[in-house]
Each structure stands twice: as structure tokens, then as C-alpha cells.
Amino acid sequence: MTNFFDLSGKVAVVTGANTGIGQAIALALAEAGADIAAVGRTPAEDTVAKARALGRRAEIVSADLSTIEPLGRVIEETVAKLGGLHILVNNAGIIRRADAVDFTEEDWDAVIDTNLKSVFFLCQAAGRHMIANGGGKVINIASMLTFQGGIRVPSYTASKSGIGGLTKLLANEWAAKGINVNAIAPGYIATNNTAALQADEARNKSILDRIPAGRWGDPSDLGGAAVFLASRAADYVQGHILAVDGGWLAR
Ligand code: NDP
Image 1 (cartoon, protein in one colour):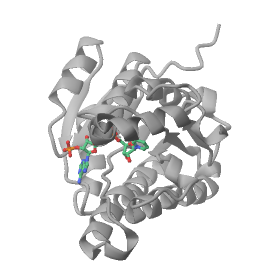
Image 2 (tube, rainbow, N blue to C red):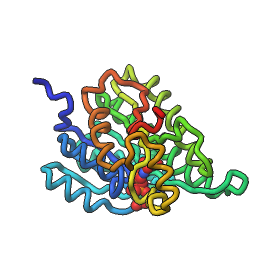
Image 3 (cartoon, rainbow, N blue to C red):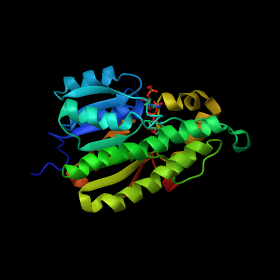
């Protein structure tokens, strides 16, 4: 029987792979057979060790994604170390919270540069390589705030709805070049990023009451969606934003 989800022989770049959702996705891709370039500021030593323990090749690629300068190098270094590039997962992201009337330019720029500008230029660098080498898969990590407004997170909402539009634009431009561009919109996932919300008893209760599944998502809940979108099972899936949210958006 055909294994639609076998990623053997594929090389995946995952940004923000040292922790949280990025680490879980990197390890799910490795379990499915992919070799991993773990990109980020904090060296993803644990992720690389675990991927190697699964029998994959795995390398750390150091880069601060808040500027576009290192993005071309990330792709070049991956190809040099692992011999190719077939899957790009744009996962790294930050959030800043303040009322819209008080929001600073610094908090606007920091989030837009990290969450949106780097995603586009990393897609561009990876896309150039993939177009020249027979195609590939791009997976952008969006959010429920790709679809909803949220509150007190203006730059985050702008960045994540921007990722939704960008995913569709790149899918349009690259579908005929053998590249699938899709996104995953996680719901409330228990990571460092959401630790303060989990620790706030009242906030935590109101979040849990609103999630049909009745629980926070675990980073590993994102792994299967990423493997699907990275695999040949998704060869005809284009510009889709796949919610993995315990039913949040369905409510
Ligand atoms: P974490 O805060 O746990 O991890 C964020 C990752 O991004 C870290 O690896 C971090 O690396 C990396 N990163 C941040 N800034 C930079 C930078 N300038 N350069 C390189 N790497 C950077 O977050 P999550 O795992 O929760 O989130 C991952 C993605 O999922 C984000 O895009 C987030 O917006 C999205 N998401 C998360 C949800 C959730 O509920 N957790 C919900 C919806 C979307 P370092 O340690 O070096 O800073």
C-alpha cells in the first residue's frame, strides 16, 4: 500500500525549532522520515539530538529572523549541510500585548519583522531553490487571529492575517511550479508563549470554557497536520489554512 505520509529523503527547514510547536513539528517530520534543519536564535540542541536518535540527519542553523539579512544564508546553509531543501515550516513567532491606543512602534515593528517579513523573505529564498529543483512544500504557522480580530495584540493580528493572505498569494504563484503553500492555524496550545494565560486562573477557565474540546492543545497535536501538508498526500492542497484548534473556530 502507498504510504502517502513517508518523508524519507526529504529535507525540512523548521524555524523556531528549539521549543513548543516548532520542536513538535520538527520531530513529527523526523518521525515521518525527514532530515531536519532546526533554525533559530537559541540552538535547538535537544531537537537535533532527538531527530538523530530517530536515525535522521539533523543540523542546527543559527539565525535571528527579526532581520532579513540571514534568511538567504539559512537556505544556503541547509542545502550545504543536508544536500537539499524540500519542506519549509515558518513557525518562529513572537507576540506583544497592549491596548491599541498605547501600542508602540517598537512593538509593531518587532512583531511584523519576526512574524511576517521574515516569513515572506524566507519563502522567497526557499521558493527560488524549490522552483529550480523540482518543487516542495511550504507550511506557514498562522493563528486563530488569521480569521478573528483578537484584543490587545494589534501587530500580532496584522502579522497572522498577513500570513493568511501571503499563503494564498504564494499558492497562486507557485502551484504550477510544483510548490504547495499552505498554513496551519493553531488554537490555544500549551507552550512558553501561552504560559501566562495558563497560569491566570480566571483567564484559563474562560479559555477552557470556550474550547469545544475542553482542553488546551499540546504541541504534538500539530505534528500530524504538518506531516500531512508536507507529504504527497497534500499534492493537490493549495492555499489552505488548516485550523487545529479543538473546535474553537467552529463555535
Ligand atoms: P514559543 O514562544 O514557545 O516559541 C517560539 C519560537 O520562535 C522559539 O523557538 C523562538 O526561539 C522562535 N523565535 C522567536 N523570535 C525569533 C527570532 N527573532 N529569530 C529566530 N527565532 C525566533 O511559541 P509557540 O511554540 O507557542 O508558537 C510557535 C508559533 O505558533 C508562533 O508563530 C505562534 O505565533 C504560533 N501560534 C501559537 C499558538 C499557541 O497557542 N501557542 C496559537 C497560535 C499560533 P528563541 O527561543 O530563540 O526565541
